[in-house]
Length: 221
Image (spheres, rainbow, N blue to C red):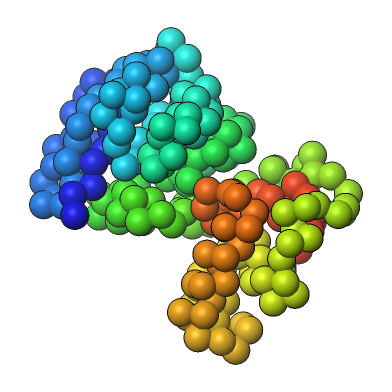
């Protein structure tokens, strides 16, 4: 199956580089480019790409606003946003994750890793650059509410809460399976059920939910 991608960046040279890299892959096709946030939304609404590579600092509506508009559009429920940024700890990255981005990578990422990231996001998973996940989530958690009954969390079984805690720690399905003594398929099934019950888009948003609801706190491991 071909993965369709739209590229949003205010630098034409960057867009051209990403296009050449991605279109060299047999299973990826670039369906549009945008130089502003407004153009990114327009391209997404016209082409319905599987993935939007989203720069954050653009004129004409920045990447955060564009991400929020794309994620909030019911007609684009299958489109996922992968933020591509220069600075890992940029405040804009935190805001983009909260706006609904499915992950982010830095612009100096190795080409093979960018291609992998596109495939991961297109498959419905989520991705954050290695080494920054905990710091990012600590920033997200700065405004977290005290623990409280949340209808979305209340619907989870005890085992599903255990799995959510593992997801919040940034663990993969294989790592969750090892920690909870279940098979990787069982772990994946639990994650899918949690996504369905909570109504969030992906694992990144599950982690944000866990922190913002107070289920876990900064520094938790």
